Image (tube, rainbow, N blue to C red; front, side, top):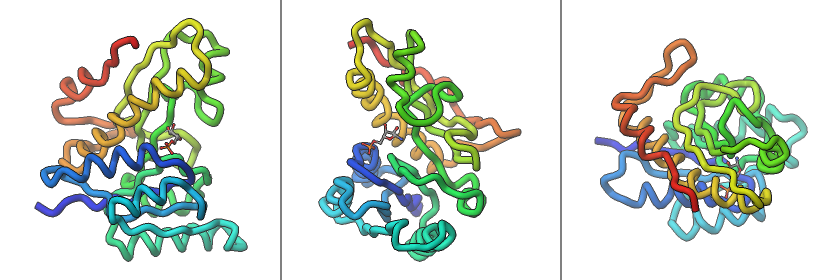
Amino acid sequence: MARLRVGVLISGRGTNLQALIDAGADPAAPAEVALVISSQGDAPGLARARAAGIRSEVINHRAFNAKQGFEASMDAALRSARIDLVCLAGFMRILTPWFVERWRDRLINIHPSLLPAFKGLDTHARVLASGARFSGCTVHFVRAEMDDGPIIVQAVAPVIQGDTPETLAARVLELEHRCYPLAVQLIAEGRVWIRSERVEIANAMITNAIMINPVG
Ligand code: GRF
């Protein structure tokens, strides 16, 4: 069976990109990263694509007068690479409803909190300030509103006394690297569908159970 062709949009270090690349390196995996687009020419994540022999493009928003041109350029690159699914992985530009609708239900994002709590930036600092006992990460379909949309996979990490935003981020990041490839795999296997803006997954009990991370 043909593998799902994944396009990954990045702006920075690209550790989630790496997790998706690593998952696709298994010939038995149902999905592979086929294109990486970076909004930043100096994003360290670009070297990860190069090292894996994956096509990459820099599409810098500053090169365009309007957001429409920037997004149209990304859209054209994704289409010419015959991308089936777009993954946002630390992509720091807010997408317009035009792009979001064009890739509706084929565009997913990872966010380092248990959505719908703690949308937006500085997530871990805000989690710590709130006194919440748990945080985690969420992979979701993208809708026009930021960090909004049907949830595919979540994982929970405890907040530990003495945590800093950095220590909590590191604990959550480990989970991100498991959740993102899992979400892509589930989609590639055709096990994910959206009903009334909620995700349903075939054999969901199994996928939920492995996402509980022990303390430490
Ligand atoms: C991750 O924490 C992700 O959840 C958030 O941005 C960060 C990107 O990290 N959206 P990386 O570039 O994948 O290492």
